[in-house]
Image 1 (cartoon, rainbow over the protein chains, first blue to last red):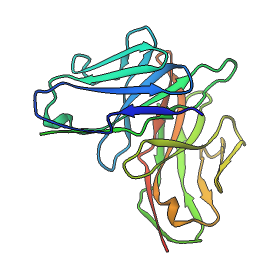
Image 2: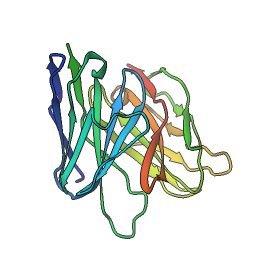
Image 3: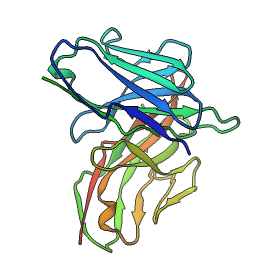
Length: 119
Length: 114
């Protein structure tokens, strides 16, 4: 159980292109989804948190207009990197957390990540 | 503030050796603690967790005990296998800005040789 599917797994595109990454919870309802960015051999940096049906909360230093997040349903969140440039190349990972009544600090379930390469 | 410190890698071991990866944390309140594992080119998988002091999380031969007095959550395994080669992340969960967030350590790469 608790499977999160992320698509695509790899994207290579030209500078200036906008890229959309999907994150789906396959067997549970994800009330909260998280988007992380990971540079080579480094830890995960939280970019934003989104709750279904509301605007995402971005971490300090993350450009809202650059990284558009939509959490339109309880099973789908999308991250769109707008007008991507080479410095946006990175490994992007989503995670999802369901709502389990009475259980605090339940774990996040991670997708397999998307490697984005901007030429 | 809230932070997680892990021992630097890489950690290189022979198969069947004993593994310890140190993790210490600073946190306000009472965090839950986690170990995640990341295999090459993949996302993170939850390995084990502990939600309160003195809890021991265990899975697949790995274990870690939540030590409040030393603010530690060291990961151990008695006999590692080549298939355990991966990056291991220690993390804590805190409420910040109204949300439950994970704060990760830098990760420790483990390489196990036959």
